[in-house]
Length: 77
Image 1 (cartoon, rainbow, N blue to C red):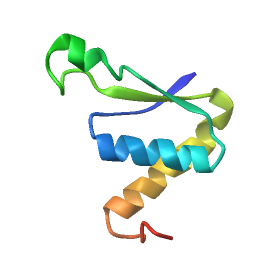
Image 2 (cartoon, helix red, strand yellow; image 1 turned 90 degrees about the vertical axis):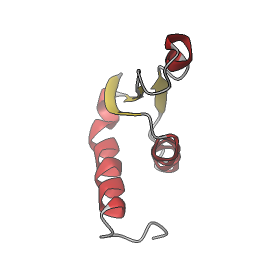
Image 3 (cartoon, one colour; image 1 turned 30 degrees about the vertical axis):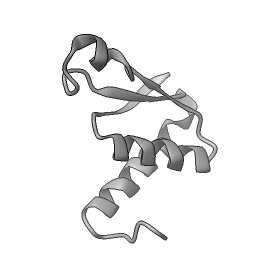
Image 4 (cartoon, rainbow, N blue to C red; image 1 turned 60 degrees about the horizontal axis):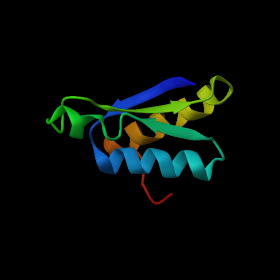
């Protein structure tokens, strides 16, 4: 598996996971509970991992998220 993205933003993380699942791109989130062990909620970012063969499609999901964040795309489309 290859790291696609790192974040501590639970909303963005959830959106990425849901969007990948909708496109049939399997993903895993690593380090979900590591920040609890560390004692600092922002010390360790969660990593979204995908298979190497799905990386190109997964990167398009990140581009879509950026367009939505910048207001260039309607999140409901």
